[in-house]
Length: 534
Ligand code: GLN
Image (cartoon, rainbow, N blue to C red; front, side, top):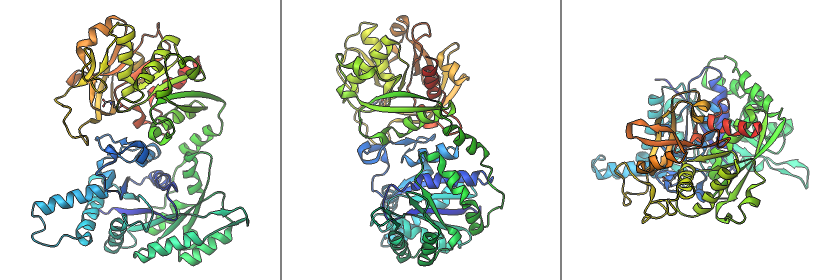
């Protein structure tokens, strides 16, 4: 397998949008008929982001094979429209875990185990295995963090070795930096980028391409200067000016001929990328003719990254309908039965997304009750489905103390409970129901009318399951169990009949993980359509 490798590093500051740059390049190469695979290396010591607070790391993105990963993978999948795998995200913690296990198992046969070569070998093995497993022509690897961070040194060193071993025609490094604009003097400044290139040079890597973020497109002489001082060919210095929508970035890079630059360096085919579908999508973004506003009732109200895939799924569904979806995250803890009407009336639909732990749960149940009674379109995601069932059991079936044992272990009516042989003493990391499971949708249901399929596959990340001993009671009282994972008889989708409510549906799975810019997820599309219809 003769794969080629593109590494994307970052300098100057974090949050440069390396992930968007990587994803955009991935899509451009895919449109040249090149098979690509993408991955992100995170230099922190956690084994995966699954146990990290959203305050630390934003959302945990789940791949189809059940890996709990960095949210940048969501950008990758939404941009490149490919399913990634657990090969797509490793952390320093995972690398060290493997090295330490090998050491304990006697694998190193008495040698002193060192960062170079043992840790770097493990990183390289991961890169090369991804190439073998994915059979991709080009592997794009984004290195998290900023060059020069102590944590990321081993990863940068591994790249240097890969470049040295595989040769320059097979490996390139794209360094992303920032060109600040100083308003007081009216100038773009190249010095931070120069220093950042110097930093990566000191680690033995000469970047092949420089991609600079900037407020607006810098003038030519700035590119000339960067080319001269950073020792990078003029045509290989590109810029990504701020734009109003991340989905426009691929077109900006296409315009600057990044495909030609990369193809020249890696000796790829000379086919022009066919970006016509992408141009059509961007045209829709620029032809918005209506706006809707959705409320997301959640725990982390000042942290939109915690719900990134939900928000992107809403936007994407909106774009396909020439609609701008505005959203607001409403702090679930602040909602009670007295203020609920005034708090939620500005929204044309309500989403209750996934979540863990007690905080805000009663506020979310109040919000669901509000949408059910007032016939406001409602979409529940994972925890959102669990709470919709609890709300129904309490307020329609008269089981006042209905709950999940996650929130009240002693409840007499455990509508949700640990099933599947799990128990509460299991370790926290990696013990959830994760990744793809099939759901069978029943005929004449809203779910089936949205998905237009009987068997769907969606991704999961939860521990508690619907307790089937309550199914008959809830069904008798009008709740429809419209999607089931047949093999283990687990509830996957619930809804209300269309005669009772215009759009009330919730899933145990996370539909937000399968939206793609060119393929909105059916549940989100249905939600936005139901608002427009109203
Ligand atoms: N806390 C719930 C469970 O573990 C829901 C999880 C989620 O919403 N992702 O089952």
